[in-house]
Length: 305
Image 1 (cartoon, one colour):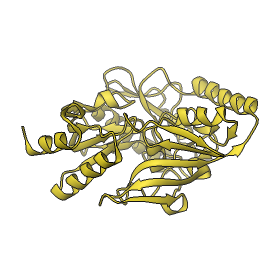
Image 2: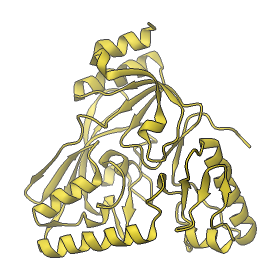
Image 3: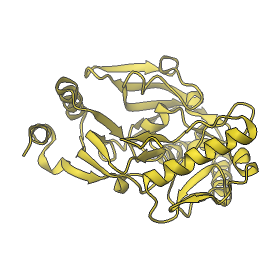
Image 4: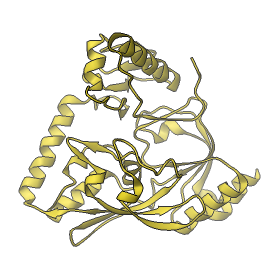
């Protein structure tokens, strides 16, 4: 046994540490090579110990929620992947505030709000991500964003310090925040909502769910919207107008249903997706002079084509 594995086992127990864990099992894209170490802390103290250890020993570490909006390289991830899938899926309603753990699915937080007649999180019900990941990228849909409803968040710094930070402190912008830049780790978020009519709240959630089922390629694995919206344009329309609907590289495809999505038709690799995305970006720029920026986060070692 190597020293990193032994140290992680001492911190959280051997049942919560795995070596060479296939990341395709933990991403909505169903793509990704092995993580050197895959650890599932259950408490704040365990999480602090892991982060402090990795920083001290200069071991790369990466936080994983439910694996949406993520493309992991075929070679996998070097270092430690810290999974918040288990033990961090908590939600409670206090007054007009929904408090949710970083691993809580946005859909669960939205449903908890609706059950207590609180409005404001309806837009998030169909976003296939966790609370922690949603804050990292200021996730949004159908006219709403995390910054619209976030009151504050509990953050763990890379030095192991726990802070309570306001939405303004997190510098939430269009699909961005200061969280990845400063290597913060979201532990919990509090959403300040308003009282509303329960029937109207559920009706709006159902309306958005129907729109999502109708327009998005939910029948195939994907990482959600692949590209950010360029200022003054819509990525999907640019891609469609460039004649790229249905374009494939291996089993990666520009969705025939919604050109803003790249989907995994079966056995797509990360290299397939990367090549396809680069071809889309190059073609759209050549035809329209517009640069498409990836919204999906790439993790691991990718080829430079």
